[in-house]
Image (tube, rainbow, N blue to C red; front, side, top):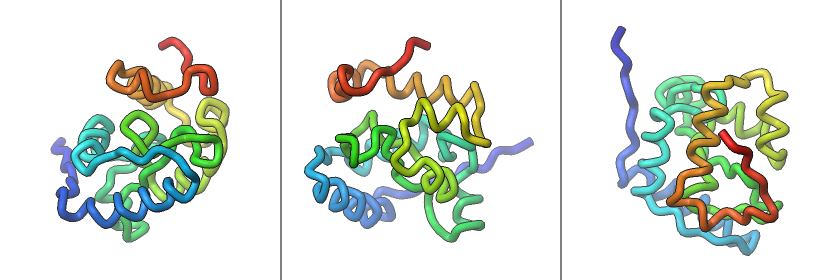
Length: 143
């Protein structure tokens, strides 16, 4: 079986990043995610929704849009727009999660997958992001 991967170029990503950064700044949160980092994050999740695994190509076919920039720690709870708090999500998962705590919402969602859960936790625990997530406010379990 051949797996086709859809990628978003840096040029195509710029309008999406600009809109997301504006929304983040509205909440007074940090906004440092770059186009290159967003593409790295999408690559880490195989250009698929981190939660349900829907490929970006299917998201384009079904919803007519690219994967969303989903905040693991919601903006309303002090989450920021940086590498380590943003994952790719399809419209359905992003809408379902809304402002819920990831660890509560995901385990109770109808798209829960232990494999994807472990991948998300691995991403959150990456040393590159370790300093940016407030460990006192947001607990990340051991893998």
